[in-house]
Image (cartoon, rainbow, N blue to C red; front, side, top):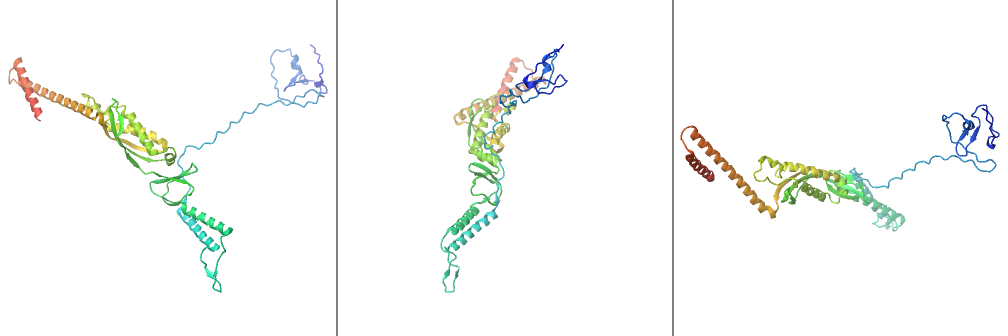
Length: 385
């Protein structure tokens, strides 16, 4: 089978070759396609690597070659706007107090020398005729500069002196930003431009006033708690909340509302004594639950809570009288039940012993009379005790 190929203007001047892949058709887009692929009899797909190429436009038209476009590079994500991170305690940079004292003394000495230089101080010497000799003649530019520099050095030296005490820390800030915490003790020098805020980091305890609450039955209560705590992270305690002590009090009130509303205050009449563990009278379990909740809430502002124990759980004044009468009635009924049970057991034991040993022979009528007399006697005896 013979084929006839026509010469295109683009193929003129191209070197001829014996191989079938020598003649090429230049695609106007991006690739070069071999001519023999257009006249293949095989139906199988042929994979030919096609690389981007420079495509020439029509000759003689003055058009410039066009290069295939590459895939656009992915756009870079814009950086997030700068925000101040959550405050976390870190040590601040301070100098020993001796450095501040030396700087202040140097500033004072410089002020004295500048004043003497300007002639503001009495003369230090006289000439041969007995006239005073002044070091200067008024405050000029150099004198003013020396006086101002010495004064600034003295103010910075003495103004930055601070005394660190045991159990206290300084939280430093500048223009609203946190600059560190000073936990050192003794005399030190701190930049006087920094704002200082003293925080007590000692172990502290807080005894609350009666806090209103309700139990599982909706009865109004008044609870007094004792909280043992300290400041662990001064940066969060000073900057993370407006008032960390007030925040701790509110955390205690919230924990009381959650824990006390799950348990009754006292046992109902006739309940087993072992069920008292499920009431608010079990102060150990209630204290553990309160400590766990308060410690979790206070940790967010740098406070460490060691214990939260209820000291007193009482009924509110408006219901105290009613609940007291109800409790007394329940106790009286419980006491009567115990006494009656004891009397009945005593009577039964007495009658059983008399009849089993054969001391008496009783019919039903006599047995009932004996039981009645013994019950009255035993019950009267218990009442006199």
